[in-house]
Length: 162
Image (cartoon, rainbow, N blue to C red; front, side, top):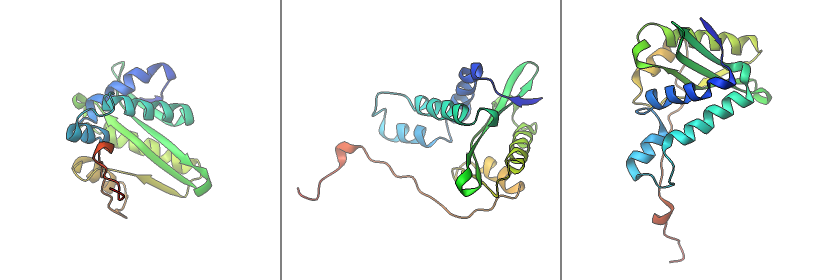
């Protein structure tokens, strides 16, 4: 069953992100590369993102429940000024992967975006997340641009005046 998430389930959603995004999170990649520069683990940043998704569009956060357990979830954000629906997060616990749950959640989210009157749907994926990229292509998403994420500790910045 897919249903709207409740605010009381935020800790479960964050835990699912911690488990599933460890190898596909920009924030985790930055932390792995430079260490924990800010004194907070990468998951704290993702927790802020999930809380924001839930507060800005609570009716657009959907969970898939199997045997009484949340197996995965998806979040939707809208930019109504530009008639765009965006999917910031799609996560399925490892023990439920390969069973079509990601497809089911994505279908549910895309129908929700369509029913909301949006004209464009967007999703971002890191290049090394081949499984997600393949899934999005199956649904008709097309690659329109490639983006690189660069980071640098502020302490390494050398002023041009030096």
